[in-house]
Image 1 (cartoon, rainbow, N blue to C red):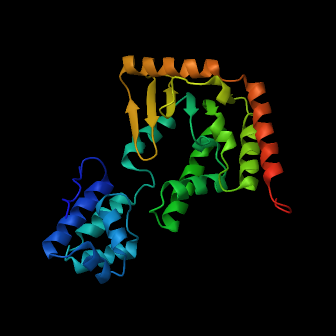
Image 2 (image 1 turned 135 degrees about the vertical axis):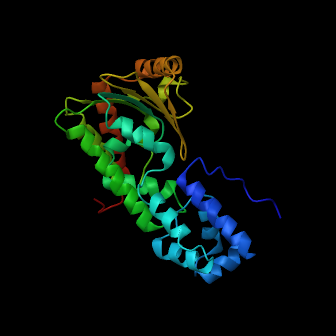
Length: 282
């Protein structure tokens, strides 16, 4: 049997919880399957808990604490994990995003979270986090939607986003949902603080092909860059490194269609989803 994957408890509260759970289980001399049977939970989910990839529902945590004799330690740690719907690696970015006066983004795969409809956001999270229970997905969906108030406050930041053409072509949650999502993106561009460009397939290779890139600017502190993958993120604060990422963004923006032409391409994509919708769909 392979050795269990090493966890770094300093990486996140989820990892700390998982490490604690694993130690308690091994101290009891049980396999994941045996522990799962005692708390009426599939052993595959016990594995996800121990890897820090999923947080157990409250009732499961209470049962785990009881059968493992944790004396409330697991429950106390669980309350800290559940305090926020955002993973630890995203916390600093979320805090800085709320203070930014300008945001410049390149997104390779999805509409930026600040511009997502509820249906689109829920589907992206459901597919991207298949190990999470529906209530956890719903919590994350509502947290993402709540962040969108940043764009409609009394002094909203500038959001200038470059979307890869794949973002507007890939159907997420079905044709009707994509029409709604693309219509919402166009609607958002009517606000003076939102600009959208599309990087067409015809542009070919470019400087940000490795994933999503965000640059945050502030009134009284240096810019930062944020690099994000499916389940990890890196906040870059070193000024020289931020300047290099800013250069990458500028190159991508220069290759993208102008805003008006981008809107036209988004409308064309909407029509495509209308054409491929089945008879009677909305």
